[in-house]
Length: 380
Image 1: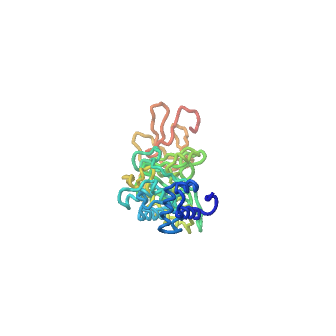
Image 2: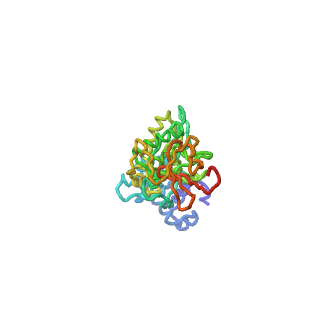
Image 3: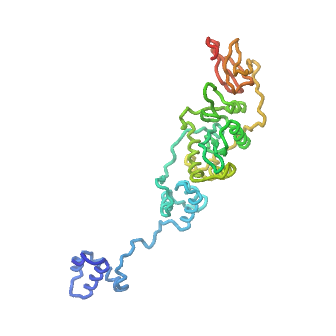
């Protein structure tokens, strides 16, 4: 059988030569060579015009591809990906809305362009499905989340990034390259943030120093400072970092987009890079949880200004005021009650409750503990 040997071109040439000799039915030749009549006539026609070259295999690619992305669009997508190498199709498509005229390409089209140029991260999501709905505070500055991200090595020393994130808008109000995680360092960096963005109503932090305390102490010096500023402090559950889920997610973004495979010379260079990246994160980067709008679209500075001098501690005239002594205790009704080392030398107030013998202990505007005179214990 002619099809059992030789190349495809040789078999086609043999069929054409036999058909040209005459005296044989084209239909019979097609049956023997196991090709359709239209295919045989196509080869004969090509051979008559182009010779043997007309019998070569040809691409089935269409001459026109009306749905193919324009070269200008592809170039724009590749440029954006080069500037933001870990951003996926959804974020890049959002940025395209500011750079190319309508209609915008679909997410899958942007993904196809990235794949065509070998720029699509394996496993990157391609759908237009919205991010899952998560709880958030109703307005900016109602709650900030704060934490030290895990430290990393510099060429000279180590960097401890302090991150402060607004819960409602995901706006990064603070991203500081710190030399340590001490209370004085956190206070200095928070003061700079407060001067720029004002005071929040509440701050959520973890239980470790300098935000929380270990052992029997209930309050840290940093908490006492924040309470004097009128900022309430709350803590996540021990060993449950998901309580600060938004800040934890911010840490992951920071690691992927800035810290991965990067080395900084010193804290000064790290802070410059932090500042540059934070500007992109806040004002440019589409956020999946914000309908692909940047955090700045939902953030407004707090109207509560930061006082350079701590306000005096004043209490209502009908409250009993006590000074916390050097042993971190106060005396009330001839009994001693533990308050905490962070309050030594500061005045606290005692307010009765609706229950006889039970009182609230106030510092500034916060209730810091309950005093129960019904108990026979010395320290309650």
